[in-house]
Image (cartoon, rainbow, N blue to C red):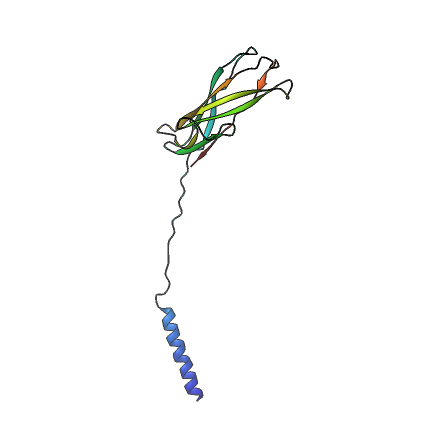
Length: 160
């Protein structure tokens, strides 16, 4: 009986071993890839300077420009917090900013903004550059306090 049981165990080990000793190991190869691209650079080409304005003046305007450079033929998204997501034409956006009097922060001046070159899916083209233009327009109330008024616009850019 012992010999029969021992023989049975050996036979079952051989059969099970044969089943797993064959060509059962399989492999898969995964590729790891990275594409390195140039960092985005935002440069202020021209600040917006509305100049000296007499209180009571209307429709005073000036332009400013941001230049964006990065990887050629890439797609980017641009935004400015003070400028909304809607406009009258594609790529144009409107908004406003309150400029603050440098001597008295309780005094502000409202400036309307119109920007072009903002939005999603903007191309950098063959030269890896594009621009965003911002037009600022103000109507200065007759009773506006004298002083220098300042505000900041920050252009945010990212690759899609």
